[in-house]
Image (cartoon, rainbow, N blue to C red; front, side, top):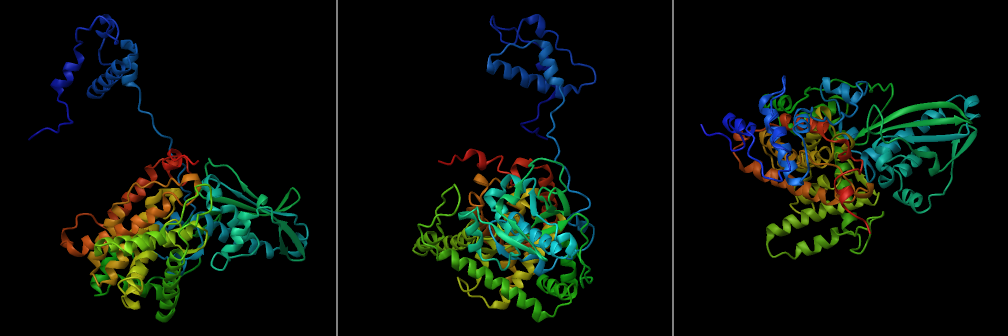
Length: 555
């Protein structure tokens, strides 16, 4: 057997112990110090010798002086560990759900709301709207004492909330606006005129609120979730009502003491792709048909009601692409980056490409850019699974439909059901939150969902659907979330285009390879994503403390 070139034999290691005859100006020090290279007791020999060699080489390169004792101390010093991030609280339902079957449904998963972030915009607006509703239900004598409403943002919400418009979304919820129906112009107005005051009617009492009532609090701390926020109804210095909330990704929210609503059991319970495929194969169903059965069973809906919701989401996705393509070429996205819109330009130029394959890639990218730029403007988008990844799925939906292949609506419906299954599994066994797992949890999951969408729309068997989703997710593992200036623009918008193209590539490979020879299963890749999320440094988790957020200089 041949040894790995990176391996060093014991004979070679032994030679490191023998001090060479030094030059007159040997930077390693006098020979008598070098002679005392005995291996300290209790220290692994190979580790000590290797580290000694590295220390010695560093000394030579830098021209520094170092005694044998200092070298020994360096070689035997314990490796420095990066402090672990506080784990997610075991009380969070998003953590508890990992122990049972998938219970998420379409109307919980696909949400319509303002960009640019499901966790930093839609989630906080849902949270403050929920708190507003709670306040209105307090006894009249308590409401009569109310003087102020306050919201405190922590963790990633505080770190990048300015760029995400978290304070504007939070204020909108406090004044009674919901994500699915809020006029984006209202949020734009808050950005352009931040000193506005709004009356909030609480029983017979009216409390005025402004953006100053949304407080960017501590970024670092032992929070139950990286996206933690607290809402308070005040009576002077006294707290009348207080609730701690968590925006756990994809627009999903929880609160301290949260109990999930009661649901019916699924017809086909599963918590892994292996179990999902077993249901499909044993019952001679497609993955989409298994999901449809569960969508009917869990909330007690009819098939027509399920498809009506799917159609609503498909139409909303198509609308975001069309809106983005209609924006003039010289439009500039809000914020300090001064990023020019380019979806329309890419589309026009792609349509003039000589080769059909180039046109296809260019047009698909333009569709993704269009929807993602709408997200960057803070306009209404669809979480699929998040706001930051809101360009991926719409690009394929539009490309398969009226914007390209013109497949029948039912084919796209089936694809949307299969795509949801992939998103459910990633949420169930890993995360959809960039604040918890980096961009792999957003663009990566969106790309995997889109790959399942396309593969299903073309009537592939369940194994091919899994293989396509797996490939798309696998090749996003480790992707960090490092938004420049805290805005969901660079690198987020272009990443949606790459996520869409990777999804199509995954479909092309999966539908042409021998399915049984695909060596990596989706469950293993989701597990890898979850573990990578745990190991990833917090500065690459939607904090704008590393990566492009530091290397890009804004003029």
